[in-house]
Every structure is written in C-alpha cells, then in structure tokens.
Length: 448
Ligand SMILES: *Cc1c(COP(=O)(O)O)cnc(C)c1O
Image 1 (cartoon, rainbow, N blue to C red):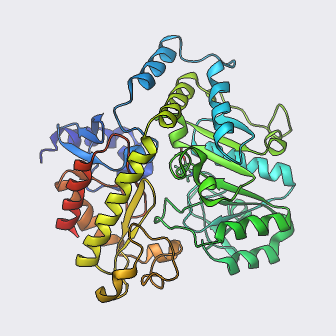
Image 2: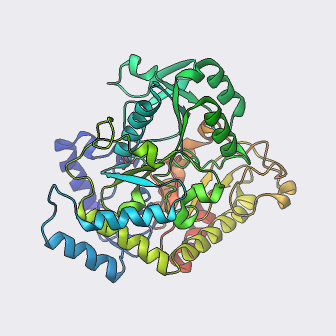
Image 3: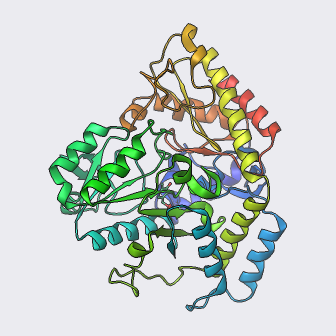
C-alpha cells in the first residue's frame, strides 16, 4: 500500500502543527495517520488513492455516511451561498430547535453551540447556576470533551487533573466514580450530597468501551439525583440521534434527564453542540437568566440546515433500520468469530455502534451458547457476565497494546479503517452496505 503522499503531508504538518494534527486522537495512528482526500458512501479514499471501509465516520457525526442525500447537500449549499452567517437569528435555528423539542423526551428548550465540548461546559455552568452548588459527579472513563471540569481522573476521594494546565483546585469540584457502580454513587452522595450540582454521564460509555449500563442503573441515577436536589445530565453527544432513533438514548432507556447535551449528528457533519432540557432550567441561560452563555458562530445557518435536513431525512427514510440492521449483522458475526478464535474477547455495542474489547478473561468456549448474541448487554444470565467490562477500569485491563500495535494495522492492511484507539466506538452509517459488513467480518476473521 503506497502512502507517500500521507507521509509527506504528515512531515509538513509536524513542522507547523503540534503532533501534526488538530485533535489529539488523530495522531494515535502509528507511525503516522493517513490523510483523507475524500469520502464516498461508507468509504474514505486517502491522499494516495487507497480506499478503506470507514467505521470511524468522523468519530460519530456522519449518520448518513459520506455521500449526503441530494436534499441535504442542496440545503447546505444554499445556506453557504447566501452568505455564511449574520450575528442575528435565522429561521432555520427555530426549525431545528422545534424538531428536537418534538422528538426528544427531556427537551423543552434548547441552546445551540459549536461543539460537544462547549455543550458540556455550558451544561455544567448552567447546573451550577441553577442549583447554587459546585460539584459535578462524572464516570471514570467518561468523555465530555476537552474541558476543565471533566478532564479529571482518580476517585471521588482523590480527584486530579488528567491534563497539564488544569489547576488541582478546579479538579476538586469533579468527583469521578466507576460506571455501573451504585454503591460508589451512594457513597459520594452521602459525603457531598448537599454540594452536588449534577451527575454528568453518557447513557452508554461510548468513548471508553463500549460499556452498556446494567439494568436499572439509569433509573437509580434518576432517583438518587432527585432525592438530593441534583440534576441528572445525559451527555448524548454520541448517542443522540443514533441510539433510540430520533428519541435518543433517553427514550430507549425510558429515563428522562434534566439536561441533555448534544453534538455530532445534530449538526449533520458540521461543528455543533447543544444543551437541551426542562424550560425552567434552560431559561437560566442569558439573556433569559443569569448564567452567561454566548457564541459568535452559535446556531450557524449552514450547520443548522445540515442538522435539520439530516434528521428530517432520517425521519422520512429507513435510516435507523438500515444502520441498526447492519450493526446487528456486524455484532452477531463478530460474536461468532470471537467465540471461535478469541473466546475471552467481548463484543460490545448496540444499534449502529460496535466494538470488540480484547478482554483477557472470559468463560470457556463450551459455555458460550447462552451469551448475548449481538453485543454485551450486561445480562446477569450471560456466561460472560462475570468477566464482561462494566466500567472503565475493566476496559483498561484489556489487551490494548495488541489492539493498537498489531490488530489495527492488520485491519488497515485489509482496507478496513477502525477507530484510532481501543477505547473509541465504531459507527455504521446509511452509506454502508452488506458487502462492507461481509468484507469487514472477513478481515476480523483474518486478524483476530
Ligand atoms: C465527542 C464527544 C464530546 C466532545 O465533543 P466535541 O465536538 O469533540 O467537542 C463530548 N461528549 C461526548 C460523549 C463525546 O462523544
């Protein structure tokens, strides 16, 4: 596989950009990432003309794949050609807000921003303003963007910044606990209950796993936050408009958070974020309320049109059936391959998300008949239940070096582009086909 152009571009990039990239994860590929020239349905073509089946899909935003339906493309081009933006409202912002309010259970009002990071920054500020409290509980291994309140690791007894440049005194307001651990959550509320503004969690840990919630876990979070007057914030930047269709993961789990953060799909492939929730809380944002929040590009017409047309297309076509069906085929195919070739590994994901976690321990081959058939659901009667990952620590214990140093490259050599590290989710799009799924399963069979 020739990669002269990518290598040359990376060489140039290293001289003018830190690590040669504009987002840290993109440099995870060694020795250097391939540069993309263009997309085509479920594929990308790199700067040297190599074509890959793409399961990264922009790290989540591209529900429809790389080839946008004509109506989506037309709306984007029209908005771009009318003059990019104005600093005063446009109709398409209201249209997209109405669409989201109509479909997502927790959302009565919404504010659009420019990234998932900006959405969680603003949601945390809003929660603190609304409750008059300082502390935020997060899940270990949860990802909420590159921001001060959530780049925190350790335990709730000993939180520490996970990045240079964040004061320890900031980190002290963030309390990390393990996902799926009710006792740890009870403990943190016993200790800090009166000062907890919110619990902030992804409904499914999608940036570290994928880890599915145990049955009843979100109901438990809803109860304990209610009891203590804290807010429950679902970070649906990945799961929003992917899991649970247009109702998002909250409709799938039947648990309504106070606030929801969005990003990725809601902007149809353009920079976006949003904070939605109960009107009474969202009205805390200035100018309705006293929590300051503003942005030059917020509600950008091109982004709003791309998001609206993408979601409308999904509402009127068989998008979710298509992506969820292929996801099911992938996960059940992987489950069979893993049972045969690497029985300790765990197939995870749901709907259009999938991953194989290289867990070191699992049940014996002979007992696998009753296992979750298309992705780990934390089902207590599954023979894998005692060894399947339930939180970030479990995921971290997997064979991540094998994944990174051996497996990822073997997949790339077979023209399959998987997420840049072991921890991130992979996505099915409307552009993918059964042939893509079959070729990918064949590649896993060769590489595992
Ligand atoms: C991607 C992501 C973010 C950050 O969004 P950006 O647009 O990259 O700032 C926040 N939360 C979750 C769950 C994400 O997956």
